Image (cartoon, rainbow, N blue to C red):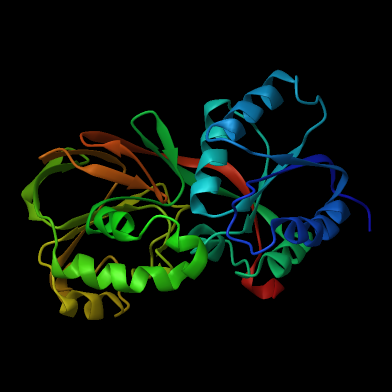
Length: 307
């Protein structure tokens, strides 16, 4: 097999969700060395390292022949690479290999949740362009959330996620639903204003959040639109209703308690100011401004008909 790329860089964290990161790196490298003539494996020790390496790639101080970058990690690690690529305008394709708890965007890319199988799928993948959300000065691939979604993440005990993975979210979710925090919001979508009180608000680019698929059948991270979901009431019945598939034309007619608003330019203010989850990283607070950047990034994608 002739390698498609000259020099690829694989970023990883030692504290990835893989049980043995070094065994995992070996398995992934078996596939990636079939894609790249030269593969560099780069450890990210501290937050911000991946962005710094992206700057060095842009400046040609890391290497002058890199033509693809890979990431082995969860949604938060992927988010750091997306920010590095966007901030430093790297015109390079990205290969994402799942190594976290939910790996939401790899589902959008039709990749297997197993890192070894996913890296093998990259051998027969193709490049597709995806929208990116710009949230203040940050870049986000999948979603922005506040309220219950942040509260739930914070209720997961420190260190427990690495041990129990998705199971650690079960007790947390029940605890969160029993004690929701409500807040007032002012949401402006394409110059139309919405006001109210809610316990959760989510703005989605990708169709998968927290390990589950949003049942909006025409939601796409390639259409130049964002999708705001306002949870107007909080109850277990809403969770059941979420799993009923529908499209944007009839969502608000048949969905109780969750209002759907599509648009491309969004501003959000809350009272009080609320913490904001961006792709699994809680590092912003309201107020926020969100714009969609159409087809802004290129990612290796595995087609359904290639399975």
